[in-house]
Image (tube, rainbow, N blue to C red; front, top):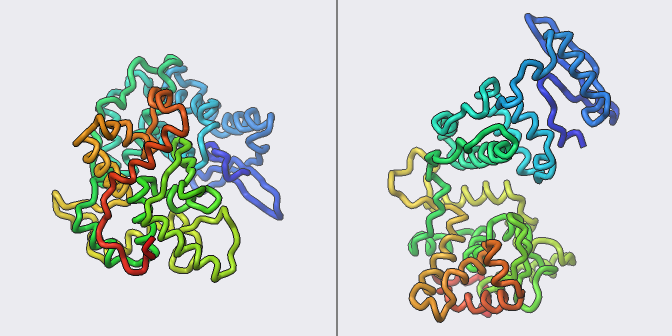
Length: 378
């Protein structure tokens, strides 16, 4: 449980003989100051922490903070219901962003932070564009939370110039797709083709495609991001891949309808980190990306997994654009990918209508590359 507790500055957690212990610990001029504390969830914790802080520093945390400072914004947001309801994975990112805000701007008034200040912080993270973009999203969410609570009048994250980097998610060109499909290792290609023909995200493809979610060739998916419930008709190529996985499972004597169907070369379900590392290694082996980012020339195609989703959407959108009245316009793309806005959700309220449209969308997808021999024909 304590692994999910956000510990305040100077607080450390220790585990001994199965019990948790918390301490206020500080080393100054080689001298250790150490005081025991109650559990952070207990009613006595705040008073105990403040008392030790006053003993060590002469003040309690935030004693002289302005009620509209960035430090107060960070603290109030951390105590909010919005923060407590964040999924664990999102909370880690939010915590990192809150730490940055407190370290860089803690003593300043939240209303004095301008776009140029956020841009400077964002640029300092430029070595990792994806991390920079996620951090900016979290910082913007915190300022957005503070706006109706009197901390700011305008969100300073608006107008920040983002990096494109690997977040561009450009569609795959035919030559690169052919290389991946024909020369890639089967356990990687299976995942890539499933993403390509379903248009779904990597997390959903490797973790949520299972027999329990498939009925009559339709994958009834609850997306990990957004939690949209989406019926995804499965293309014959994907059905063929699934049959090869089922055959391997029968041979191994595995009976578990909720076990993810797509597996690693060892026959185990993928983990997010495991697939990410294998995916990167395979792209390098196939010379679809360099070993180091700085070796990539400006304008080179950036091969990303999410780009397969973009490729799916691009092919459907291209076919739709030729005859929007016949194919249903942009609504078809939104429906197939699960991007249903509030107004779109009302328009496509009936599940059967969405399912019918998604089934027809399969007809708009071309056969990507030449099907590898190890995928059974269906």
